Image (cartoon, helix red, strand yellow):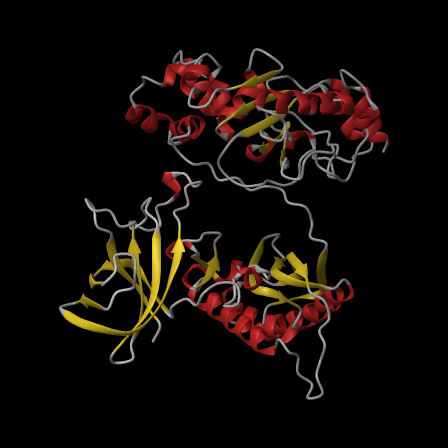
Length: 516
């Protein structure tokens, strides 16, 4: 800690928060998603050593690194252009306001927080106040892309800069060319040609730039302007439930990896059982002797702590792991868990939900072999319209409460076994305009009705915006009256009359499903 004290003494502004392990809790440690608004916070490095973007390393800072070297601090020759160390501090913030700690700053996706904080400016001011309270002098940039937020935070005219939506090209044109996050050689080459601002590249021919400086300059420019998506790898928090196995000698045989997996699963499942949890997503990580790593991820449709079932899912793809020159550490982590309480066992030793568990295991294996997006199931949707009352989703993303959301037959009239995606028009003969039909024609065949039940009236969902009603082209603003019909052959149909009877406009009749 003496080295950290000397680093803090070399700062422009000393606060107790500077004496923090730089690899401890990060300022922002997770990311909520991709796209949307990006917020970048920089200036934290000034607290540790007074070294920022474009500044020279002070003698006090270099001396502090030498006596004695902290095990987490990089040597002076490994320090980058942006500065040396990021002073980190865990600030209480909304759960989704989390990002990736970077050298000289932190990057976060803040899309979900603008509404909570009553707008973008309120969000930025709130974060700035939190940083000042913790002892930081932040510079904040908020924009639609990570690159634009990065440039605005470091080269903006004010301590916090908000780039309006779809205004990157105009707002960032006057910023220095260093805002494109280029390497030193490319940056010096562009400046030697007189290209000192980001806007100078807008009208430049792309082919000469690519041939002289490679694709980095154009790629960074496209990422900054939102023309090219920028992949982000966030620093995520360590999972709460994991098992770790260290080997005295490196291993590489598939049999050894399989035995290690069984041991890790037994330990992890025991831990999950103690906390009444089940795994929904497991990650097996191997660390090789050459300081490289590889991983294998599986998912389950329902929470599970069945070690045999989880091992079977891993073994389907276990051969894809490359041991390289040997594996010295294997970690099994439950990155996503749900509650899984103990279940009552009957006298035969079986649970009442064994059928559901077997179906869930089948879904898990099929998803592992065919891909999670190729195994789907229906999910309930809050809608009275039959064609909008369900939608397909990947089976692995099923919620344990989805089945409870389905309305049973006691809550509503019966529904057909087969529902047509698009209702088919039919010709109907009805003795009474508002009564059930006695005969209808479909596919050039006449069906004489011997039994009819109904009507069941379903009104249009007037409260839904028109643009949301796109799942079926049959959606109109007319009222529907559904009938359950049975013909002379015993076939049962589900038909409806669309609209009320009017002398100038008769209602239309449609076939929507089959009961048998």
